[in-house]
Image 1 (cartoon, rainbow, N blue to C red):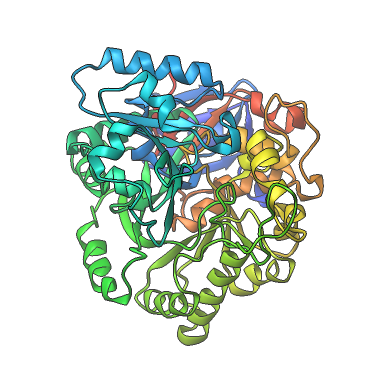
Image 2 (image 1 turned 180 degrees about the vertical axis):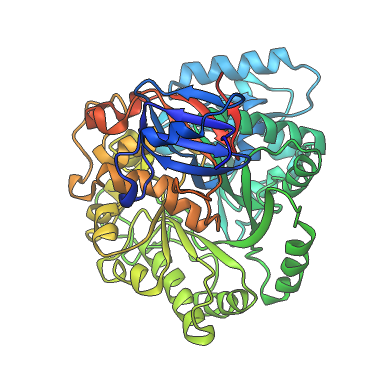
Amino acid sequence: MSPADTVFTSGSVITMDPALAGATALAVTGERITAVGGEEVRELIGPDTEVVDLAGRALLPGFQDAHVHAVFGGLELGVCDLTGTTDLAEYRQLITAYAAAHPERPWITGGGWSMESFPGGMPTRQLLDALVPDRPVLLANRDHHGAWVNTRALELAGVTASTPDPADGRIEREADGTPSGMLQEGAVELVGRAAPRPTEEDLLAGLLRAQRMLHGYGITAWQDALLGEYGGHPDVSGAYLTASGRGLLTARVVGSLWWDREAGAEQIPRLVERREALRSGGRFRADTVKIMQDGIAENRTAAMTAPYKDACGCATADSGLSFVDPEALRGYVTELDALDFQVHFHALGDRAVREALDAVEAARAANGRRGNRHHLAHLQVVHPVDVPRFARLDAVANLQPLWAAHEPQLDELTSPFLGGDLAERQYPFGDLHRAGARLAAGSDWPVSSANPLEGIHVAVNRILPGGDLPPFLPGQRLDLTTALAAYTSGSAYVNGLDDTGVLLPGHLADLVVLDRDPYSVPPAELASLRVEATYVGGRRVFGS
């Protein structure tokens, strides 16, 4: 065999294939892995081979994020970024400083604030008016299912006490009906459509900013969970096409085309056209359709099988929203499946999960198994009778593990208001795994950190990194191997990248080097692991 281009030696090569356990070396030629093993791999070292001495460090398949909003996250890093704190005083300082630093901007936009920072999760327009009285302000919350606006933004958008709530959202109001400054779900677009749109160059800059960050976390591929116009956000498809065409896209990306929930099956031919138009011939394609079936539990728009409770613990008449009629959903998914689209569901409440699984089941019955790898993201609540259906239907459970831990948004704004025994069914990762479900994992960044090592930490411990609270429903923990697989081979399966996610000869050399072997550290220290280098197709895209 000819000498390899790169040989990694003297480390822990975690292949994610039990047949290759205990490997210590790996060789790469061109874009692909050519050998995995032990000392015999050194025979592929030639005069021009780059030798990477792992010196006991770990080499793994590159991490893949099965649900992320990369361009939006990259854009937010360049505007008024409120992530990294939950302190209201800090929010005030950040907003004031940003507005002062950018007097030329007609709108102050950004986001990342946490609902736990405000009574009942509801900030007011008056708080923003005191900071920025003369310009409109539009700030998305951390989970991007709501936005905080000031009076000027409401005025410019024409949103008043007489403005009706949209079918898929809610305008929070003061006692006399005046909008309070908090918009939920589809109501965000009432103001968002009046805000300036980012330019194509802004979007490209956001993508490249995000790509640098994601590579720094060891991420080599992802599925962008929203390509299309939604909530005042622009379609980011062009940024991917431009980056791919200019040779700037170093990651492998699958795009999820947004399903307009105000339309029906008449949009499907347009989705087919967009799929064809977005075949870049490079590392980007868009052969997935994203259907958002419900909202989130914090604002009671997640669709549940039992009604929410009120502040006194009594049952209400509200059990959340199904954004797409469940019967119609079955027809839509059956048609999309027949056209070989993958369907990527947002399904957070247990009723939405059931409705999504019913749709997958209808498609399977009508079309047979076509290998389209449908997946359900978020899965905050799954009814026990639906847990075994994932394996039976080969529907992938797409987990966001970082959310499965005690923190104020969960403990104060969610769990006390879940009816029946729903609070004890949250993030049932262990049950899904034991029932044979295929698991993938993602971050939903910028909703939460994109760092897979933090997600793996929570999946294994059910405690936030550095947290001192008890584990959240500890019976739902995953073992380390299963958590790693969700972020590697599991997400590779969802992304249709079958020659990634496992370190095998012939597979693409998408790799991550960690400073230590994750099996060598106590579970409570998993989040302390650090990425030292990331490779895509054998080329280093992060690290020195």
